[in-house]
Structure formats: structure tokens, C-alpha cells
Image (spheres, rainbow, N blue to C red):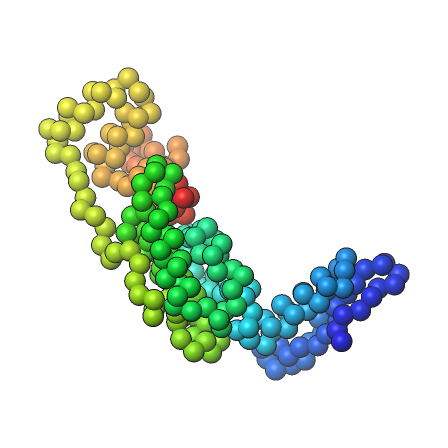
Length: 237
């Protein structure tokens, strides 16, 4: 048994040995549990993680996925993944055992996502739904490739969303010139629309601008290539 009572402190602790990734035995000591059950739960989660067992929950596996994948990605790339996973995927799957998740579970989740609405009351765009599906499938693919999950239930369940964005609408110059006087008395809106239209920048690029990006001596505006996409996903809800 790896769980013990600390009689001096009146708390419980875990002391166990495990084999690390180099094949060496290491000791793990974790103190400060209020109850024996808390200590046993921690021991179970730790042992499953170190054993690479997919009897762990989806939530526990996500922590391992984070440790494996996050160091390989740019900060903004990871944030966009993290936001979708933690808002749209973990609430539904976190307590399910990885090995027991079925295509039916994924289909039920897909149907829930199709019903969801963004903060403006609109159904989620097909491309956003596809992003959710891609992140879920990536987690299962990681489990298949590195942790011996037999199959990816998200692939079997089939796609969610659409591959291509809806057709983009745009203003002609004549249409824009009719519009812009309507916001001429709203300084911030006017400047924002002028930048968007004449510079051809994206909304995310506009929102990322700071005073340091404007060089009025050289008539130069610096646009950052890497935008924090996750901010816009927060707005989508």
C-alpha cells in the first residue's frame, strides 16, 4: 500500500516508486491530503498516468496530451487549441474513461454542438464546428499513435461542420464611400473602418494594433502576422 497516515500532521501522504521514461526507478512523495480517499485517488491517477494506461479519464489524458503537444507548438497555436478543448470538449468528455468512449458518445456530442449558439444568437459556423471536431480527433489520434488506443471514435463517428467558409461578401468602393459618412461622427468606428477597408487588414490584425505599430514619420503601419485567434473564439462562445 502506498498511502500512509502522517500522525504528526494529522494528514495523509503517498509514497511510491515508479519507472520513468529512461527506465530508472524513481520515488514519488506527495503530502498534505486531508483524507485517505483523497490520497488514494491521487495515487490512482498518478499510477495510471505513469503506466500509460487508457483506463484513465479523458480529462486526465488531456493533461498528458498537453504535456506531450504544447512544447511543440507556438503559443498562439496552442491557445487556440486549448480554448476550444476546454470550453467545448472537456465539459462533455472529461469524466469518461478513454478506453470506453464510443462513436455514439462522439455523435451525441456532435449533435449538442450543432444546437449551440454563439453570443449573438447565431448557430455556430460550419468551419467552427469543424475546428471542434479536429481538436477532439487530434486527442484521440494522439492516444492511438502513442498510447495504444485501438481506434479513433471521432473518425468513426464522421465529420462535423464544413471544410470551407461561407462565401465572403464585400463592398465595392462606391458602396464603401456611401457608408463611411454615416460613422464619421464616431471617431473610433471611423478609424477602424478606414484601416480595414484601405489597408485590407483582418479584424484580428486590427484588434492587435498598438500605438507602437504606427510610424507617422515614415507613413508606415506594422501588422503582426501571428494573431491571438483564441480571443475571437472566446467571442464565439
